[in-house]
Image 1 (tube, rainbow, N blue to C red):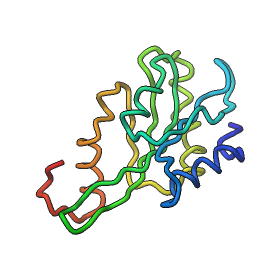
Image 2 (cartoon, rainbow, N blue to C red):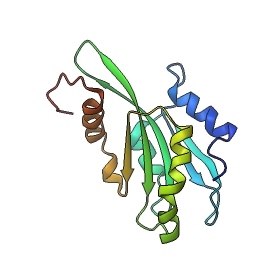
Image 3 (cartoon, rainbow, N blue to C red):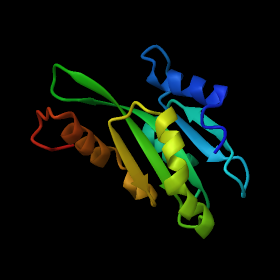
Image 4 (spheres, rainbow, N blue to C red):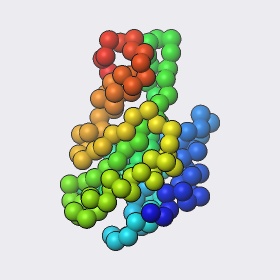
Length: 146
């Protein structure tokens, strides 16, 4: 695979991770219908809901998202989520290769609390993801509620 560590992807990754940058997600797509070259598709500041609008039902894509949530009235947590998207219309050979090719993306976008394997935009409900982040983080002051 080539392109996961491209300068523009690394820069977008650092932006999403930075507390000083408003960007809170990035989306990586395949550069063409065949081959394994990746490219930065887009970035944004609108969180999971904005990202979900950009996902292509005919593609496999990779996303990295900053999620902020409150544990209680006194504290706020920031966690990162890696999303491996395989849309319903993704070609069979591309689907088969994602399990292999996603390893490189995981190495480049290495700092994440959870991975979400999404097939439907409903898999990206923020409340559900926050519940998973709380469980992964160990401290849950809301008794498992989102």
